[in-house]
Length: 252
Image (cartoon, rainbow, N blue to C red; front, side, top):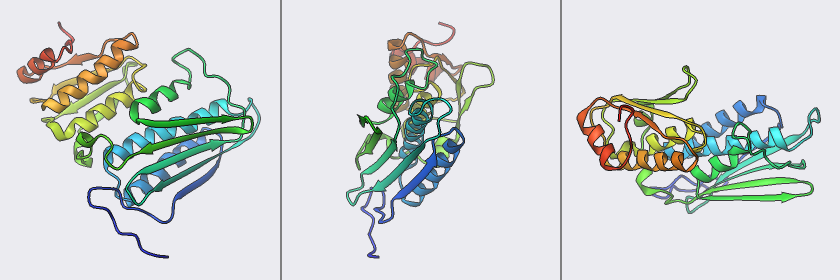
């Protein structure tokens, strides 16, 4: 097999795509997430893209599990992921059922389509009588301001669901290179902007402009979907920066 060199600043092209053929059942979702994460990391895909693809591919698979086949009817789903020579990552999720129209209720898995579109700019859905194929693409230069987020920066952000309402809790200074992680965690917690979410910045003393912009972006998505992003912050600089960006604070 011919070797393929990496393009500087881009994911490393691979000759062997990730191919999974799994039962369309909830237990398979963990397998998809773990396999995809390992494969993308080995391909040297940036952490923010790994996280976004794990969420988006997971939602596509969850839709196949919930909507592709009638209740009680076994079925399968296929996942194929490849990195092209130019650095573009392409993920394809396919099933062989008759997808039903997702419910309007935001508690339904149909919101996964919204999440995919919020996380990735290139989403293609092909419905046929014999099944549905979801194709997700991330160009080599997708969202350049997000491409510098590191695993350490993502690690200071965690999603706490213990109180019922998802809350993204952050600690330490959040400079511009953490904007990718902030945006991704907020979108993940809010299921792409359709579920009420909170942001706890009490452990943060400083926000970079790109982080403020990321928070304002998700706050706008929340308003468009009928809920306000509740932000808690005690430090002066984050409060002032968010206020200038039009993001209301919890005690305002």
